[in-house]
Length: 142
Image (cartoon, rainbow, N blue to C red; front, side):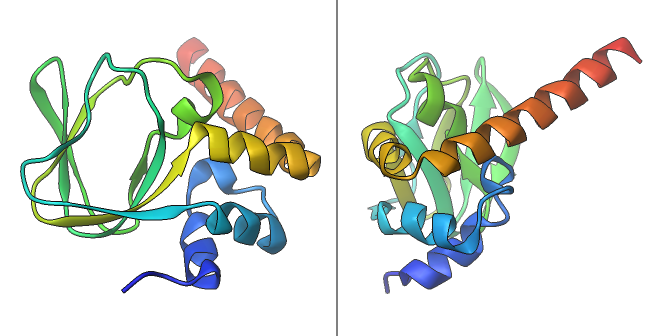
């Protein structure tokens, strides 16, 4: 069963990229997301391919590999592909459905439309990214 906009927004508030967003902004983003289903074994994102967007797992599990080496398992409420929303760059990992999986997907072009309609959202995202960059820079110099 598809999640409502309100349910999806509640899931998005736990995604670090969207941590600074208001409830209304989260609901706007949620409204642009589409449900996607894949069977076990389906490659959802392939390392090196251009990323088309962001995914939030609502049911099932996925495995993540980098350079062919297993890295982590993802499950409900986990997400991947958020950087693709911003830079349209290549995927840094391969994500494969380990079980039948249900995801909520947000394409980069749908996200850009949301940001153009709600410029304050872009400012919130920039603040979150700056905080993350500051944290990484601090860790690298410690």
